[in-house]
Every structure is written in structure tokens, then in C-alpha cells.
Length: 168
Image (tube, rainbow, N blue to C red):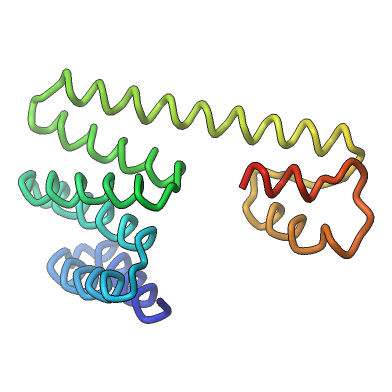
């Protein structure tokens, strides 16, 4: 997993520098490692990044293929935030292909997931605040991780640790 993540980070750096071919090569290698280790979530992320790179290169065929794979992997991994991003990417690609109706359908899926996730986070935030726990922002993943990590070692009213684990 560590090697795949490193290769993914290298690929993203190369993409940011404009070296799309180097980025694709690095990301494909990372993707192969993810397939070997059954890292579905990471493979979904990599496929989504590959789709975006091919989109930037105006290679809509490959962008579509990788985007559809990223959606399948995100569904399989049950990562709703990731699936939301994959829907948005695919909608963008479809718009470039002049398939506006299907692009709109996927954008609606993106918005529905985004809104649901925001409501869920807001409910958690309100429950934690009502319980009297002072957390800077539960919208930050680090704050949630810290809360979950220390919920067993500090006294939290109303079983906040269960609330957090239910949402995660």
C-alpha cells in the first residue's frame, strides 16, 4: 500500500508539472500495485486521477474508461465521498463529449451525495455540540480522527464515540 501511495503522489506531482505522460506511467504502476493488493479505494482514487489527466489531454475515450472504472471501484469500496468526486469527474467528461443529458444525470448524483454527506456531518456536529464536547471542527478529518482515537480514554457525555463511529 505504501508503494502505491508513493507512486500515486509522484504521479500527481508530475501531473501538476504538466508531465502528463510521466504521470500516467506512475499512476498506472500504482494502479497495478493496488490491483495486486486488492486496494479498491486507492484504485478508485487513481482511476479518477487518470480520468482527469486524460481529460486534460483531450483523450476522452481513455478518460471515459478510467472514469467508469473509478465509479465501479468507489461503489465497491463504499466510499461515498469518493463516489461523489467520481460522479463529478464523469459528468465533466460527458459534458466535453456533448452528452449533456447524461452529464446532467451524473451531476445530479454528485450533488445528491454531496448534500447528503454535508447534512450527515452537520447532524454529527450538532449532536457533539449538544453533548458539550468542544471540537474546533468536525468537518476536518483530523478532528474526527482525534475524537475517535481518544474517545475511549476520556469521558465523553452521551457516548459521542458511538455517534462518530456511526457516521464513519
